[in-house]
Length: 312
Image 1 (cartoon, rainbow, N blue to C red):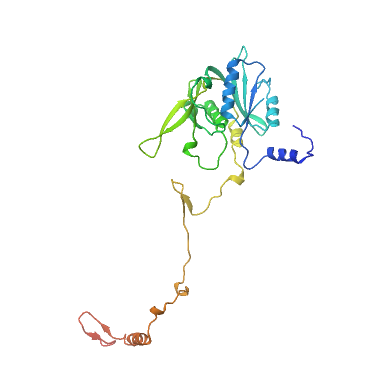
Image 2 (cartoon, helix red, strand yellow; image 1 turned 60 degrees about the horizontal axis):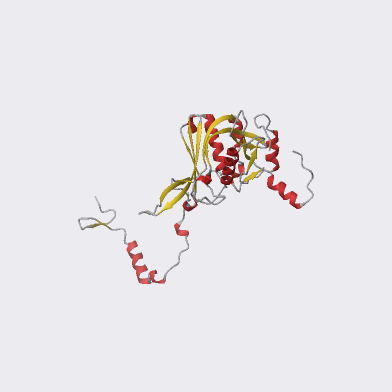
């Protein structure tokens, strides 16, 4: 995509914000409708849009598995790396395509067919605040054993993980719980509201109330990047890699333990404060010198003393 020469300061700030960074911005998602949809697809996309908001933009007729160029231009235009495409045709009804891009090109795509859908408005549970970071759980052995399902699980976590935070997450801040369960060729999506109730201990009692949406997906078409391309996309910049420090380790609690090597010290050269009360008088010092001069005699346990040279 060719860009004209920047003429204003605002345009320069926009280009600088889109340029590659050591610490990238939070990923935004495009919510795109296809040329043919129905009310089920629109409602499901709206519920997912509310879960993703404010890191989402609603914006048209694309055929992603035939031509990826239009959606790639759209993502570059709106500076988005995630997208959700909804369509419903006679051949493929009630379909949602989750996808992500890397370096301006499509990395992964997964088309999920909606088998059963219950909108969030049917659940009489208070909804979460927009922009809340959810807790995500992937259940089922397929997310670990099957390579395609494993990549789809990674894509769903990348899509719904919310904004990046540097600080420690507070327990009270966990208001939403997203569960994805894989079984056979199905993925069951459930969204819960986390309630923290009083208990006899300091740890609160946790209860989950389903607040919707509730969607049963069937995995349809997929386009998964190769292992080498996925590894290149996950590579971290050198500026973010922490250098290994010698003689420094970390325990299970996160405390840093270090070993310090100190050279030999001459204690006689240390300047200490001389207290007047500890100074010896002249008589004590002269007595000590006399005792040292008489050190030629040695006393033994039998009570007798022998001078040097008198012992046989």
